[in-house]
Image (cartoon, rainbow, N blue to C red; front, side, top):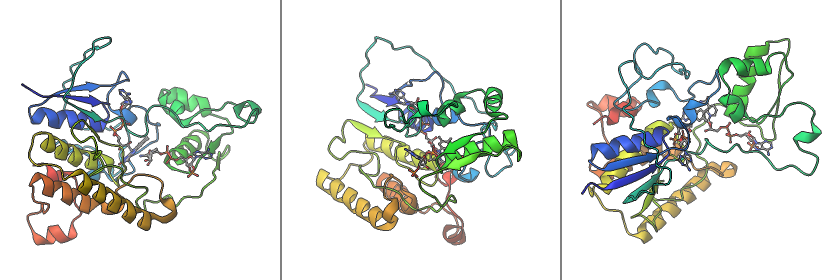
Length: 317
Ligand SMILES: Cc1cc2nc3c(=O)[nH]c(=O)nc-3n(C[C@H](O)[C@H](O)[C@H](O)COP(=O)(O)OP(=O)(O)OC[C@H]3O[C@@H](n4cnc5c(N)ncnc54)[C@H](O)[C@@H]3O)c2cc1C
Ligand SMILES: NC(=O)c1ccc[n+]([C@@H]2O[C@H](COP(=O)([O-])OP(=O)(O)OC[C@H]3O[C@@H](n4cnc5c(N)ncnc54)[C@H](OP(=O)(O)O)[C@@H]3O)[C@@H](O)[C@H]2O)c1
């Protein structure tokens, strides 16, 4: 009988797991709380572009079409005029379903906005202007969003990518005459530094050593190119479910998790607060290849192996 795989979330991670589960002959069912697929990419600012270079942010068998020439395209660029998803939509309200294995792909950046707790009467009510979270702003239609900030004096709180994108939105809408102000508590070096943040809680960042037979998480830890990492990780996971290889013992997995955590702590110092495999990118993908029996060396020539960076298209087969 076909094994049923429950997948929670239909962002790029959930869609990838679904695709690779189908390829292996499993029976996947995807649960999505929103009315659209694509996760964070369905609600981005008008001016948001990829921050990962395009070659690193594409599906291995579904690359950007040649018509997209920018290195960092925005959301208006289609992935391919030739490709179409085949979607089967079912409303499962009040119909419980059973699955042999559950894969959690709920992402880290969609859903509930992170709004700080304020002391009594010192929150948004003390300020007489409008307060809005960048997620709610991103959910507005583009034209309405521009109208919303047009001509206003805007204060942006935060100094990471969303905050800088918001500042860009304001400067695009309001120009030099009406500049916005960015208020932040921590200065960040806002160029990609590829330092890892945080630590690994799970074997290969997706299997909890103590419940390996039941569930996995895809897409929670960060990397330098999240789609790329999620895709290779999905392929590793479906090979595991298909019995291509077996997991190490719980003790070995926990030892491995601890070693990885120690390494990341040592490497990332004060930035030790987020899960990211930045510095381990190449090692991590090699490890996934070795488990599945694929060669980690994917290049035809030694020159390319040594000097050309790896990307998703190297793993198409
Ligand atoms: C504006 C923005 C730009 C980004 N740019 C880049 C970039 O350039 N490069 C890069 O590598 N990364 C980037 N990221 C990180 C991005 O999060 C990942 O690249 C990737 O898209 C995450 O996909 P995901 O499927 O893991 O999660 P998500 O896209 O967050 O998808 C999770 C899905 O799960 C659903 N869900 C959540 N809870 C439930 C539930 N309980 N039941 C059912 N469904 C649920 C959500 O509705 C959502 O559709 C960006 C993130 C943001 C917010
Ligand atoms: N491709 C793109 O262009 C793009 C666009 C947007 C987002 N993204 C991605 O999406 C992810 C989320 O990015 P993000 O910028 O939304 O979130 P983030 O990286 O978590 O940054 C949140 C910012 O808000 C600040 N902040 C949080 N709580 C605060 C508080 N109580 N008081 C003051 N400041 C507070 C943080 O300050 P501290 O640093 O002090 O905590 C930080 O500057 C990242 O992976 C990012 O790369 C990508």
